[in-house]
Image 1 (cartoon, rainbow, N blue to C red):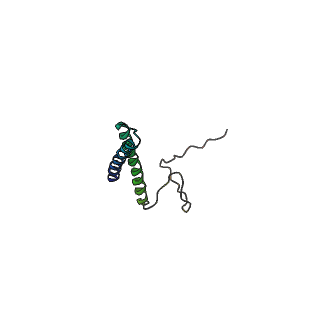
Image 2 (cartoon, rainbow, N blue to C red):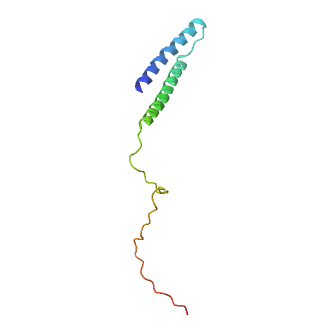
Length: 100
């Protein structure tokens, strides 16, 4: 990624200044240096964004799925019966109420 950014910066710097010089020679229109630098930095920042996105996409293609099963707490797998858990607190026998 760093090489791509440096190459884009150098190419943009040379091309923008060459185009500005050719415009000044043939048409007489002068492009101020601040505008030239803005164009060069814009091209460089665009290259940073696109090369970063390209690197992320390539890294995403290299990912492998996790091994084993991922437990989902909201749903159970259809091939296994739902498991019931015993209540950890024992229930004491309550006295029976008599009807009068």
